[in-house]
Image 1 (cartoon, rainbow, N blue to C red):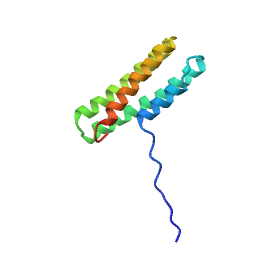
Image 2 (image 1 turned 30 degrees about the horizontal axis):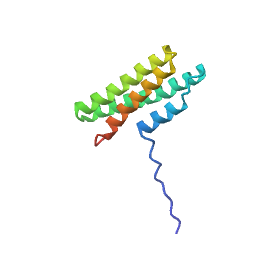
Image 3 (image 1 turned 90 degrees about the horizontal axis):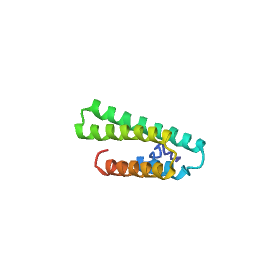
Length: 110
C-alpha cells in the first residue's frame, strides 16, 4: 500500500529567520543592506498579520500587543538600517530583534 505524507514542513521560527538574516549581513555592500531590508519587510508583514489574526480571534490583548510591538520594532529597524552605515550598530539592532523574537516565541500559544 502506497503511503503519502501530505504534511507540510513546518516553517522556520521567527528567531531562526532573524538569525539567518543576520548571518547574511556582512556590512560591506549596499546590495546586501538592500536585501536585508527586503528580508525584514517580510518578517514585519508576518508579525503584523499575526497581530491582526490574534486581535480578530479575540485572543488576549497582551498577545496582540507583543506581536504589534514586534512588527513596529522590525519597521523601525528597517528605517535605521536604511540610514545607518555602521555595520556594528546594524548587527546590534538585529541581535535585539532576535531577543524579542525569542521572548515572544517562548510564550506558550504563539
